[in-house]
Amino acid sequence: MCCSYRKAEAYNVAFTMRAILKRRFAAPPSLSRRRFSWSALASRNEPESPSSSFLIEEFTRCCYQRELPAAMRAMDAMQRRGIWANSITYSELIKCCLARGAVEQGKLVHKHILSNGYLPKTFLINVLMSMYVRFGLLEEARKVFDLMPERDVVSWTTMIAAYSNAKLNNMALEFLILMLREGLRPNMFTYSSVLRACVELWIIRQLHCCIIKVGLESDVFVRSALIDIYARLGELQNALGVFNEMATGDLVVWNSIIGGFAQNSVCDEALNLFRKMKMAGFVANQSTLTSVLRACTGLVLLELGRQVHVHILKFDHDLIVNNALLDMYCKCGSLEDANTVFTRMKEKDVISWSTMITGLAQSGFSQDALELFKFMKVSGPRPNDITILGVLFACSHAGLVEDGWYYFRSMKQLFGIDPTSEHYGCIIDLLGRAGKLYEAVNLIHEMKCEPDAVTWRALLGACRVHRNVDLAVYAAKQILKLDPADPGTYIMLSNIYANAQRWADVAEVRRSMKAIGVRKEPGCSWIEVSKQIHAFTMGDNPHPQMDAIIRHLSELIQRLKEEGCIADTNFVLQD
Image 1 (tube, rainbow, N blue to C red):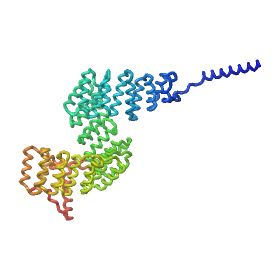
Image 2 (image 1 turned 60 degrees about the horizontal axis):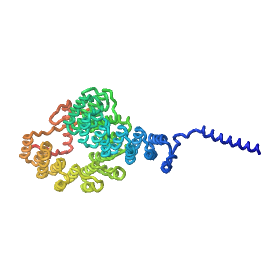
Image 3 (image 1 turned 45 degrees about the vertical axis):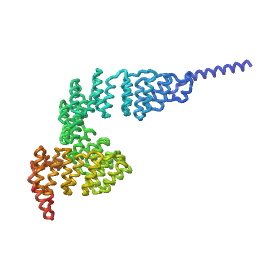
Image 4 (image 1 turned 30 degrees about the vertical axis):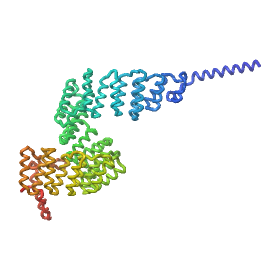
């Protein structure tokens, strides 16, 4: 029995030692396997809950790995324990909220950060403010800004940029003044943001002077913003002055100046700047090519547009570039190329559909435009006001009065679009082409918005076609009330009088033009042959091949006469 007892005791000792050694030398579980049941944790007593350091460690892991639900549960547990992570970790959590559009979770993060008297660093409050700005909650961002105990340049710049982007221009400028009164010096991002809020030239000039005083005129962002804002106001010489002040070593500035000239329809200079950019050794990017395409569209340069298309193929297909390419082919009349681009676009927005519909309508393919519109209603995005304008244009040029009336009358009910003066102008043109002039006049008087000069010009053009002199005089008077120096109206009215052989009235219109100093711009046309532009201006014959051109035209006219063609003298407006 003694022997049996000793054996049992030895066995128990060995078993206990093995258990102790197993526990001592067992490998700790990895961090990735240490998961909690956060709902169970909430019901545990304090002694059984994990340590504060471990809780913060788990929260940090969730934030960096973008596990938003788990991070929010960990943050809730930290809130009950009264502990906080560092500012960088919270900024990662806010990035996660922004990426997922999680507004409510972002507000909970804000509440947690400022709870129990905890004072976060200025950096983190700036991140919170930026979060509200990007969510479009300007009032919330302003509340955070107002409660900041200390504000730095980033704080002020965030609010200035937010107000500029929201088109609250006066607020952006007011914040710049308040910032200066606080003794803070704006940086390049502050000035580039506040410049976007300027709508008056004298304010831009004052800011430009301030920029020069602090030595930021050579900064890329500031120079680009100055060029953009001058170009937006049509001050192209000022924009070019900023560009020419110093050598440009950045593509962003080149893009700004080329884009500014293209947007203001000074397309030849935009292309000239593009050539200079290439000679300076810069490689065009998608932004550059979009502006160049706009310039090609303005000058109707199909061959050059095709060359730009080749450059675009080197990049990933961007929606904005594809839309610009589509617009260029449509306005240059190359519907086959436009259809190819449209068909191959992986992503199409309402601009893509509207451009194609309008392009087909303007090129005389009205039925195709209407068929594409029907397909858009089934499988495309919701039409906008530009889409409906293209549809009305198609109906007008195809003489589809009933269809045009239907789309015009139902655009509010079907698509939630209120008709603008452009829509009224299009439907008036439709009625005018169909000879329903007095219906067009009644519609003008029924307009919800005040008729503009474009609307009355549509009626005036219809009056000319249908030779209604009295109504033409009425329409012309309405136009001249709105735009007294419009040469086109005087010329149109003079031509209508001439067509009715009312030569005394023609002379009176011409005297009125001379008395107030109105002059008609001479007509100009151009054609691209073998990648060279040939321009022709009325009354000016500087072309080196003009004699040969006139000889060839005379031969064509003679052949037309031989074929029995009789000239229409209705528009030979001489006595």
